[in-house]
Amino acid sequence: MKRTLKAFIRKEFAQALRDPRMKLILFVMPMIQMAVFGLALSSEIKNIKLAAVYSPGDAAAAALTRRFTSSGWFVPAAAVAVPDPAGLIVSGKADAVLVFPAEGLARAAARGRGGVQLLVDATSVTRARSVEAYARSIFASHAASDAGLEPASPPFGFDVRIIYNPEMESPVFMVPGVMGMIVCLVTIILTSMSLTREREIGTFETIVSAPLGNHEILLGKTIPYVVLGLANAALVITAGFLLFGVPVKGQLWQLFFAALAFVVTTVGIGTMISTISRNQQQAMMGGFIFLFPAVLMSGIMYPVENMPVLLKPAVYLNPLYYFTSLLRNIMLKGGDHSAFLSNMSALVLMAAVSGAAAYKRFRQTLN
Image 1: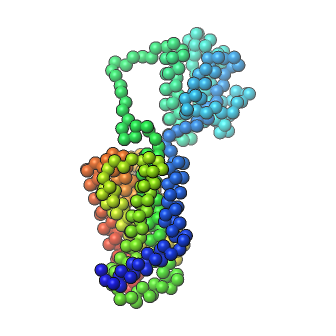
Image 2 (image 1 turned 90 degrees about the vertical axis):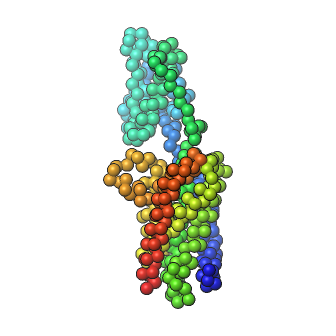
Image 3 (image 1 turned 135 degrees about the vertical axis):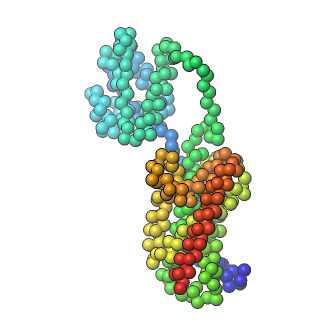
């Protein structure tokens, strides 16, 4: 490597790490984001506000309501003197309402009219389906144990075995996706602002006049951010393991090459954004314009299988989708070779395309 290029790379490292605020963004903010997202983002439905409407003295209805609130899924809503189930849902005081027979649950059951109605707020379809599933499970358990009814015996046995996340903890699934999101955020934003910062402070002309080729200038501007991105990836993976107990069942070399391909891709995208933007504000806005669709269509929070067919091509052009799939496969499943090769092939191709496009655009900018 030429001495001038080495000096250029050292200068870029020094410029990126000289500002204490930049060190905060690189090394402290990812830890804070990991802690906040890992604790806040959860796919499990809990704390469902449940109200019950029944006659005073109805012991059977009260017992069934207590079974709901003691299940861990439901919490009691505020007591209401006037039975108004629909009003409770509309006002938001309850997410679900149990409506018992006015004559009493036990008396109605004795007469063959022991129906209980459950009103569910379905503004969130996923939440409503979970509430319905929880309620059916509690009703079946109550009928079998408290009401003395025998559940129907199925003609075959049914056993469930939970693998890769036996405790069914949400952070185990969410944290690998959050890792990819944090690395993507840091690399794209920092890289996209690097070149525009040179223009704003007037040092871009000095770089152009240096005895370096176009590709050497590009390498000098991008290699430091690739290294910092890899360091950031190692930091968030370690934080996920130590803070949330996310296992790392696969090989570390698989994680390294997956992170390398992803960071090269995002640095290439950030470089293209920096060549288009005229100032740091435009560069930051361009980074966020890319990030928001990338996060939403990556499978971090929502399954991409549920997306319309017309949007699937955009999903398959999203590098964060492949990196998230790689992290979850390597860390949780041990790194299946076929899944690793398919996702890595897509990432390597994207890294090559984004690098070539960034070089072409960067050369046009210099000329």
